[in-house]
Length: 319
Image 1 (cartoon, rainbow, N blue to C red):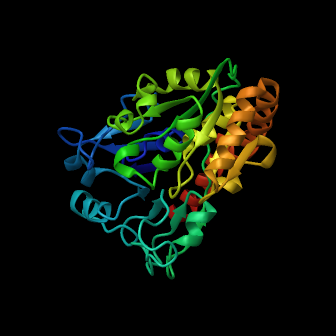
Image 2: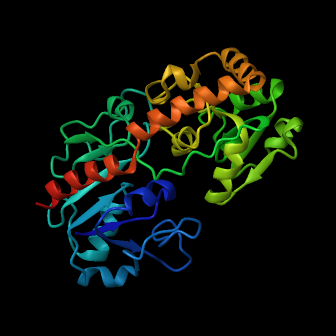
Image 3: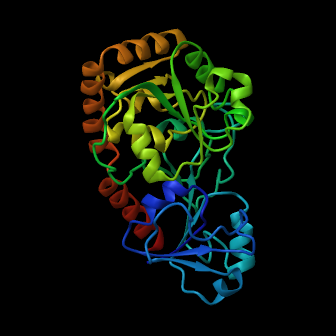
């Protein structure tokens, strides 16, 4: 199939592009949100082709994967076809609703011609999608390999824009843990975090390329997932596959994604701090928990399952 898809979420798209199809990635001057083209920090296959919007009208497209409401208008303007009517389409919803937790109406609600694909069952539960067909396809990622050493007695966290996103990203939880335990933070938009917690100065790592990030995470004793309200972060799954034990805020899909033997999931930051302290003091227990988490993540979030699920949905919609 020939699939039109925007580069919105780089890590997720990396997994999706591992499928057997051809992919058309819009690219606009300046590579803004309407057309970022191919990623610069991930290795994407040759089957992912950049394409200028003015060329799309002449392309044979089997399915479009929408990820933002505005892409409905972009497809009509750039291809002359209406998603769900003239052009088979699915809508991929990456996030939990940002409005009222249980009553926010989805942009695709009551459109019976465009299925909504959620990345977690929790997201599907919280969104009001009306009569729109819905399906859950959980994340799947390439196995980065078991790399855990845990030699650095520190807790690692991956959080993008913690200062701007504040409570949504669990920045306050991160700071509470960092006040008691040694923490390394990786991500984008970390400027200003050291001002909130001077102890983190020198332990903030901005926009680390994925291969180097995996190596850095694998050296940490444990992984902290502080997010209060978000979808299930791919970095959490990557950490589990790398072999890190997990301490995670018990919110959204985290409880369902981290088995008890792989670490601690709790709503009370004090419980997370106590769990982190135990892991820092007992490298053997940390390694055992990390191995359990890796086994679970490989079974549940493997790339083959993810691609098989997506092929089923795409072929059904294209048909």
